[in-house]
Length: 563
Image 1 (cartoon, rainbow, N blue to C red):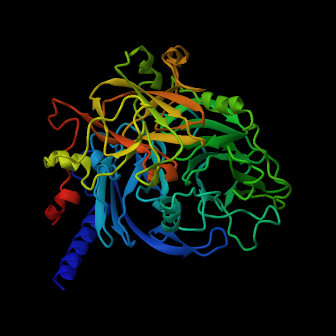
Image 2: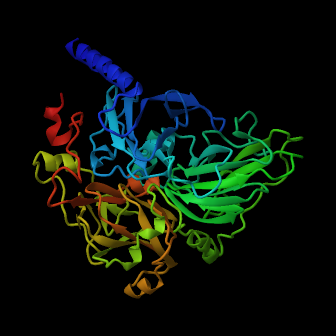
Image 3: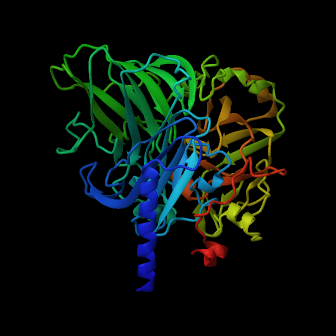
């Protein structure tokens, strides 16, 4: 009874605190936006089969978080699930506040029927991002939504103001929920072919007789002659998708928070965890509606035909329904060079301003001496201690019960090791470890993601954007530095690595904290393909890393401190 009373008082206080935030209360000088997210299960049938999905405020996908450069963002999360929960903010750098990152290495999970308020600043950022649940494959059941960070009024965007904006959350989808999928992976099996692709939480338009009747599909209403900014995010479990709009060109203008040289595409590969912005002009005749397609890539596309999402682009003066075959991608995955060249074509717009007034190209990353090299190699899952696990450099990451930065703060020893290998070692058997990178604050490092697995993988670094300077097939060697783009490489936070290939990125370690490095493919991430970077300013005075927040949750060795 006493526990119930205490929870009631806690919930009431949290509600009043959230109400104050919604009314614009902020202690910081910059403006703020605030949200209350109630996370719960609902029943939905996106592919015609009733299933349990994770909704936010009753919506699937969740609502947009809309902010402007340097705004403070508060998100009060109520966990109504039957298991612990965390949100992470894909691509948001959360400078100096890894406490708010929402992954197990930095945060204790929010228990069922508890709440927690994330508070962070979108410092010096603009662009298209998304949030999602970071624990135990929960993203495979939903819980995701878009994040938009707008330019400040005094900093112009490098294109004409669009007539409207549209967000697409695309991703492969299983009719089994995340707990069932966990069981598949725990048994040592692969997840196998998804049951379909969703566009904004909805299944495919009935473009063929193989699509069941009665499935709700996405319809986007537009006006002829107008130009729309279209933000597209691959929030799926593990499948790369090709996105296209029938008969319409897509002008790529932004990649995960950075403006790029503007290039037209008829279709574009978007890998798991990636985000892009396109400008699309409604310049076609309105004799019919048009297909919006997101289809599986880098698989046997004939066998995987069901893994296709189809929506409808509807002109306000349209005279008929879309019909006929779907448009096909211009690039053929059987010709891997041509596919890779599409990604290589993404260049930074060096003359455009981003979050700051100075041009993006004013930071001459190619002239900085590299102070360290890390080669992170992935291989197909292997058995460790009788269980199938995924590894980086032979280590399958074991999340400690006490988050690492919390352990540092409270001097809990033995939680993790600072001995993650800089390069893979073939003579050491794979192992389970809480091993992380001991990085140097203000260092300038290169990371080589070497994919010796059989699937396309996407790699992400929390707290950072990095310059994608090269990618190629084969194994990386030192002489490959001669092929680096040291002038206008795009800066982003998630990059694809093709099977049997490598991708090289450069980054300046100027964001203190403990930051997650992971594969975005949920199956491999769940099986341990991740690590962290610990970046500590030895002269820390509170200006480069915030102190532990007052509302921090406690768990593991510190659970007795939880109020």
